[in-house]
Length: 303
Image (cartoon, rainbow, N blue to C red; front, side):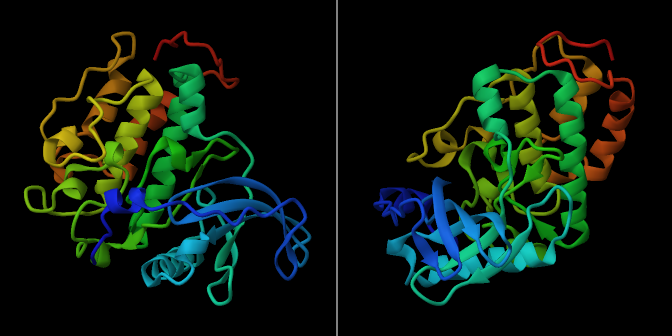
């Protein structure tokens, strides 16, 4: 499985459909607002006449419609969404890959991204982080049981609803196929060592996603990444400091009963990281003693 060089992808122009409000994207689905997008796709809030509700329409950008790699990735994502049915994962209501506007019909999820909360609040209260971690462990444990890996666990891919949702399965893969990946795949700052350099750190497995979860929880607690951020257009350890840099300690006011399991997720060897079920078992007693009504301030509870 060959992964396209992300640097080359960034260099391409991001063409947009520029649908105006009310424009018919495909028969029965009308644009309401542009929600965002990536290098290969953009997402519109749309009205679906058959479902009679708003949905998130994920479309390939105009310059990617005839690109076989992008169409194949869309098909893989649709297959993953169809296969994976879990309360913390998004739902897909349809896929159309033929015609002028290849797209996925996704559940519209209300709520801010975790990355937005971190940017605004700098650090989340422990009362928020622990339940979030348990929900994400639930989704990752389920994916592992289905022989699937997400490969892009990060704050931007977490919608803070009730429950929170782990979204964007565009590079999720069956474990057997993930082990055939050649070259880096994922988002640089959240990639496990085995995703960055398959030669020195072989072995993508279920614990690969635990690294992404560990970085995500660290950032939610500390308001920063656990190591200096690499340069996206550099190579080797400049681009991937996680290959050589030591993880910075978490703030001293964070209880050891929380810092230790989070730091365990950032062990370089996958076998040294906890599984999702093991991390959940460690965190559940902490959740049991938290106040039932979350306090949203920065003050740390005694746990």
